[in-house]
Image 1 (cartoon, one colour):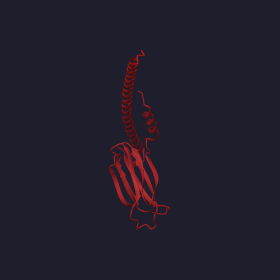
Image 2 (tube, one colour):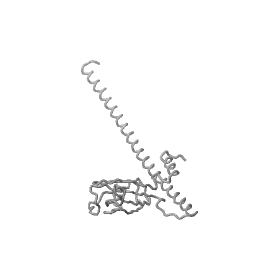
Image 3 (cartoon, helix red, strand yellow):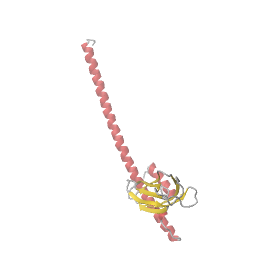
Image 4 (tube, one colour):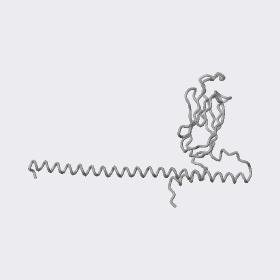
Length: 210
């Protein structure tokens, strides 16, 4: 069976890390006194996502100003929204493939916080897939991990196949349209050439040059 380059690269990534995306990653995000800062992840469908966040002050000496949080799905659906928070957790299972966005901005009322015009530092612990499981110790743990890993690899391979199929369909449509435009251009060139020959012949006949 022939394996496409896209699928081959995906298999290598899965063998090394179990996912095309980092299964778990810690992010430090600096949120300005005005405006918002966002993080995003490209995630395929039916993946469990658990995110913990903690806001500290810019001097790293304690809890910082409170923030507002909003999480949107790949198609703009609001999955989570909280206001006036210093820490929290949100979790969801993706319903469609695409880019998931989490945005943070400083809450408008900071009467509890003495520093003015302060930035906030948000620590984000983003976990996906089997990293969201709370595993026990022992042989059963390893078996369950292996089973979950296989399931996740299979889901990723199916996702890669779907994307490859979609890309192939787009390429085929593009090639077909290019071929059609080429034939149309060739036909127009032939018509223009024949018209020029007819016009020149008519001109020479009128001038009695031929």
